[in-house]
Length: 174
View 1 (cartoon, rainbow, N blue to C red):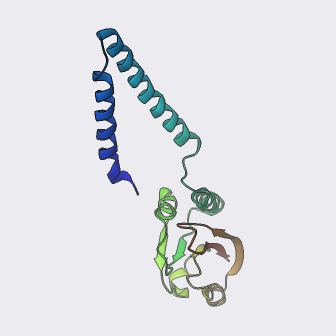
View 2: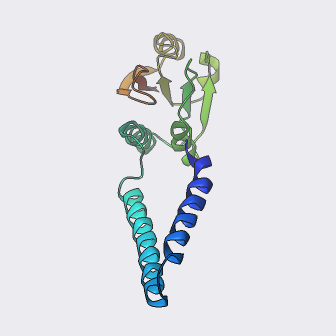
View 3: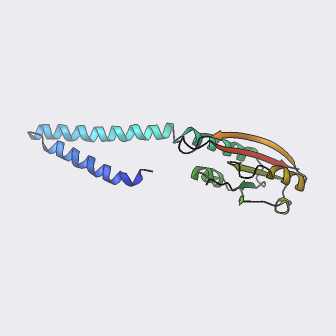
């Protein structure tokens, strides 16, 4: 969200550091200030890099989304497509990234038909944010597949003023 501010912040920091270093009374003090500023910038960069390596997620919901999608992909068979029901609210970008990270077939649909799923032994259905709660019973009945309610989570994605997003994963199999 704040990437556009980075150039202005970096330029302001650079100008402030240069002003502070140039106000040194003599060459020895100038060299000490220069080394201190370089060490502080390297230390800050190292700390931020370590934080990103230890916790690469912005929110707990990001971590939960990743874990849910990765667990589903690890459990599913390679020939089983993932059917994502389109929701009113747009999907978070990380949700799409984790789905497409694997080279498995992902289908986005508003109202899927049983004919589109007829050739598969199993299908994963991701129902995000109550896209279509009645679709599970309809598809299971029309395809003759057994429906396993695999996972249901409520994720706080976005501002706290918004209600939690509902992530439901269902596995249809013959």
